[in-house]
Length: 110
Image 1 (spheres, rainbow, N blue to C red):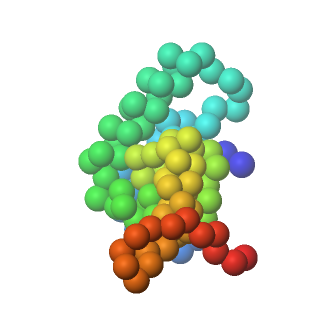
Image 2 (cartoon, rainbow, N blue to C red):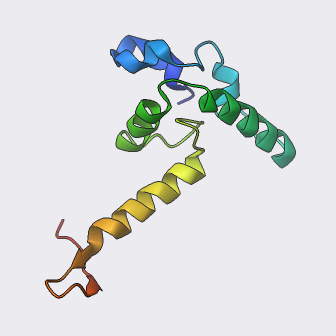
């Protein structure tokens, strides 16, 4: 699915009306065909520059993480970066602090 934050306006997320990326789908969505790495990096850099000035960057990022968006730039993060954030959060949730302050890693029950 190719979309980005501004294309979700119909979904009722109020923050999307404020998104700086409105009208720039090609910059934020994954391209339909593979692109050279240098082109991808330039596109991502340009998209992140838009995100940097966006008043709803944190809301967008939280939405992308919560809904597990797998493509595009959301909240100033690429799909790879969002995946890393989710992995760090999963590790953090597994880490339990014992009464004496020492740490141990324990998987949460599913």
